[in-house]
Image 1 (cartoon, helix red, strand yellow):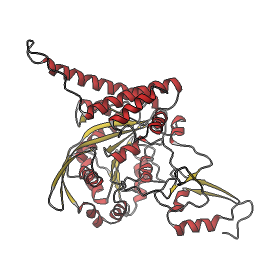
Image 2 (image 1 turned 60 degrees about the vertical axis):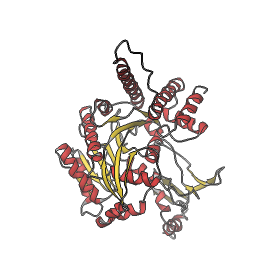
Image 3 (image 1 turned 135 degrees about the vertical axis):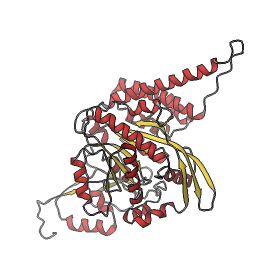
Image 4 (image 1 turned 90 degrees about the horizontal axis):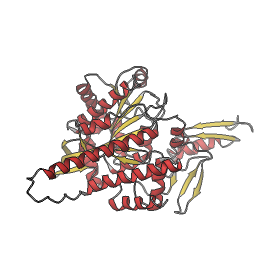
Amino acid sequence: RRRTMTRRTLVILDEIHHAGDSRSWGDGVKAAFEPAVRRLMLTGTPFRSDDNPIPFVSYERGGDGLLRSRADSVYGYSDALRDGVVRPVLFLAYSGETRWRTNAGDELAARLGEPMTQDLVAQAWRTALDPAGDWMPQVLRAADARLTVLRNAGMPDAGGLVIASDQQNARSYAKLIEQVTGEKAAVVLSDDVGASARIATFAASEQRWLVAVRMVSEGVDIPRLAVGVYATSASTPLYFAQAIGRFVRARRPGETASVFVPSVPHLLGLASEMEAERDHVLGKPKDREGFDDDLLERAQRDDQASGELEKRFTALSATAELDQVIFDGASFGTAAQAGTPEEEEYLGLPGLLTADQVSMLLTKRQAEQLAAQRRRAATRTAEPAAEAPAAPAAPLSAAQRRVALRRQLNALVAARHHRTGQPHGKIHAELRRLCGGPPSAQATIEQLEERIATVQTL
């Protein structure tokens, strides 16, 4: 190929980030296409977790001493959302109580989403994803209800996708979907003969649900996918972005997408930063929150290996409740048990909305939910006999304070959006730059209070 290239040769390299998969692959790409006078390199996911430079990509050293890739032209999610190329994505984060037994025989319990060590987060997360527990059936029921709303609201062929960690769980989730919905789900496994044909058949059909193990990722286009269930413990930014990318392709104005995720701090951060533009960074310390990705890869190739993921503990039980809704960098809602009217209010959001309408509706629903909670609290306080002295109002819990502060912050950000025209996500990102700390979905009370004070001075 080197000998046949001329001075006018133009080479187009799509998904160029794969040239950083290994040193030998990158060296081969560089050797093959270095003689080209012009190279057009395209990728939707330039950021990676390895330290292999991507051939022909320019890197610049930042103030922290790390090298970051530099693109000549960037068209990000926020640009595409503005132009109607992609759909707004709502993330419905579900927490819940989980119980499991370690291989030492100790029985542990934790609430998904609460602060804890990484090992406990990983075990609580996988306990929630256990097909034998109650968390997955409850979340699948909620996701199917959301899918029905979208189908009735102008997307009659809307489809749903469950992304599983391994083949064993994928088959179990498909059985749960049939029990919940009464309809069979299509199942796509990486080593099945005709897997690609099965994806194509689903894409052209009106079947409601598809369950897959990483087969539906980069390069697979099913525009009718509008509801997702992130039922995997894979958590690298690259994989998360590729997975969510299956749901964002817009076909008509106003279409929205809804993705159900476990309320895990790392995932909440990724969901809150959907519009962030990430580069490939060389020399950055490894992210230890991408739990067992190597083991996960093996499990997806071999059914026998899937059991390795659970050797360190045995899942006992898990229940689900809607923790919060994340959209455009902001967090909305208060805890709502599965199957309650409060949950249904969020599952029933109209399916055809602009990004601004989504923000307005979420803000309105959250305000109504908090007002209803205050009315119930006032009723309980007024129940004692009239002659009894009025009991002082119970102080808000830390969780309730965070919800109230997130609501106040969202309202102030919305007001600034209307004054300046800046997207909500960019305003939240600027507040994080000025004040530090994680996205509002994970922020502490002190961090939220600082951002509220800061946005009032902008």
